[in-house]
Image (cartoon, rainbow, N blue to C red; front, side, top):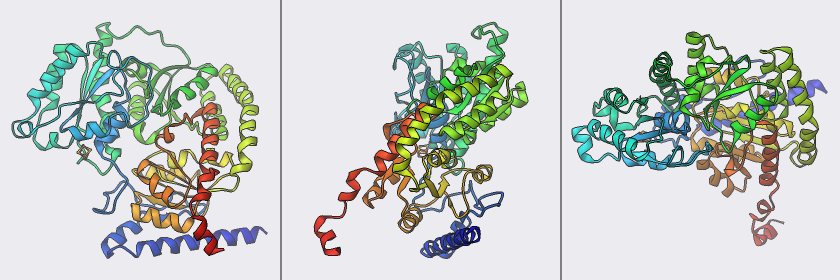
Length: 496
Ligand code: SF4
């Protein structure tokens, strides 16, 4: 029986390799060679997924990727709610990223918080010709006058800034002294790097090079907010509070007795960021986007870090135990109590939905974390993964992915829209979970789809509370009666 299962698995892996070969045939030779290195079938026991990653997209192949600006402004800095983030350059980038990402916050928008607003220098031809530094200086003054409760400003460079030789660092330094607040220049022009990923790195580096030195100076001058460090202080790093995810994570950490000092960066504030070097442990959810700053905090301030996963009860319980193990017996006992408290609640969720979702297959394609991180939540519901891939992951993400996927899973890096459609047509998963650009394509194919970036305007999905919503949403999409109405009755009758 076991032999048969192994044989079946080998057959599936073989078939899927052939499928990839078939799909790649459509490309010209050069592109096919390149894409061949980014598609693979995972084989049990291998230490990585065997795909090349973090390399340039092939022109004209309809990549799903975004740019460095999206990674820096859209992901890392944008959610810091009490700072004003200037989209510096022409109007488009700020407009299209305006409130598109559901990084929730509490605040009075326009007064003390600015998360869902679009501040832009709206470059005109004269700014390209003569440079935009004077305009930027003027804008900073205007912001200070019109939005006096802002705690600081970031300047998020769009493509032209680096191309025309503007010196936003000089403007930031000078204006920061004038308004007596941090101004962070971010060199995240979209031409840098190959995807959102370099934008994350650049944004992390600006925290290291501009914000932390500012915080240290403020501390010396006695201007940093007064704070009594405690033994259970932690920071949540790399949780953007999509649909309230950080909140539904934070309550669990607090329930086991930890004190959450900072949220990076969903519902985050400037002061929280400045206080973070004083915490006892950095808890990192999104490794891809924020490992750089956690590594820096370890080197410069001796703050250790730990990766965790709050998707689905199995991963949550493991993570709570691992986190608690970094603290004393009080926290460890609390963690066990919290796990035990939520167990019957989670069992009830599973009892309700598992029978409706068991053995259904899912294909994923998201950004830099979720293509592996949400797999345990699907598994808790009895669902099986057939394919997964990232837009902008690196080799270390694909290594981590091996802990989540089974033999025969198709892995695609920076999948093109053609490949994704062809693979999905052949694999026929019961659910596709990806982004808004993919959603309507697959729905038109009659395939249930859930957005795995925006949670399809639902969520949270993190934490125990989030899992109940996750299970409900997957069931709602998958077992929706509308899918049965796609074949028209007359065509169906002809078929029969
Ligand atoms: S690539 Fe350039 S123009 Fe396009 S969104 Fe990014 S920064 Fe803006």
